[in-house]
Length: 186
Image 1 (cartoon, rainbow, N blue to C red):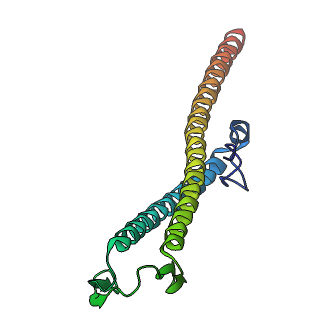
Image 2: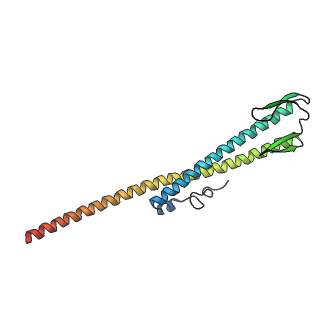
Image 3: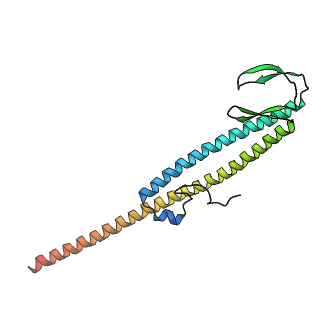
């Protein structure tokens, strides 16, 4: 399992650290946050596609198990598409075709090879799912940091505005006192 913080690209190839976020101005923070939001959405879509592929492989593995139990010569419906079936006869339940995607099929010599193929692909998808989940988790932490740093920026801006107002008020009072003093001495 990879260590946290080693994946993702919230900005220029890596997860930003809190110290990096504090160095960014508000516009830069907004830009990096928008990029991270897009990245999280894209990765979540990929995660959904992995889940769909895993469900299809699990269904295929179940179909292989069911096919093992059927006797040779058994009449059955064969799916050509998700909604189109034709009638057929089970000739040899040991030789199977495995759909490897984009219209390509591989003939497996034995049912065990077909089951092994499904198991290996499921293992690969689970590994990809886990890695992707970890990256999404890291990006969500970074997004949380964006919120904290943005609030900090807003708080500091209010503090600076309040200090400027106090300095301006004090300067105004001092100026009024000097004018009053100058007018009374003249």
